[in-house]
Length: 230
Image (cartoon, rainbow, N blue to C red):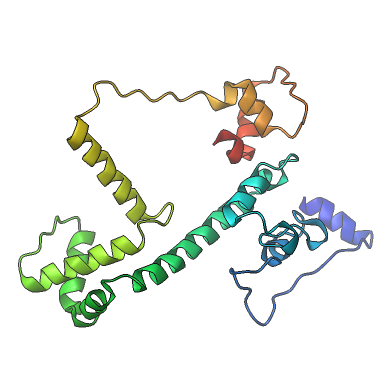
């Protein structure tokens, strides 16, 4: 690719340069954010998330639509899925903090934030980082653990966060406690690089025609398109 680009410039080929703006772009209510970040995915700057002509879509539905687009260009881009997921996490964290501030326990939580002993909190964090299982031994440590619980509650609905994983783990243990442990636990995991439908999803051909491919070709197709594998 570098060689092709150098040859293009040597032949006085044209190119487009994009520089940084003085002010950062907003993640909120900004239909031109993704077209500016990925001009090769959004021709003519159209089709951005939240655009006026497609407001019937929610943001998550629009992202799903783009990841399932027929020519697979959003799937095959190595940065688009990661950045889109990161933006969703950032927005979820921001909205969770706002919802927490509106809760009935706001006064209690804010008092705890202001009155907690920071030296004891730092000591607990250091001991936890060293792998120690810490149990509160006095009232100050109890207040610190309550504060940690408040922070966990704030991030519990953020997809992919540590708090959401802890919440799912608690749900699993609660189910086992309520209805008992499973007698059999089977996970069916099809081999993606051998399945013809997965190979079809990973390829860019619209017609369902899966010719015989070598194992390395199948693995390359799947590795270039993680959305198809998922």
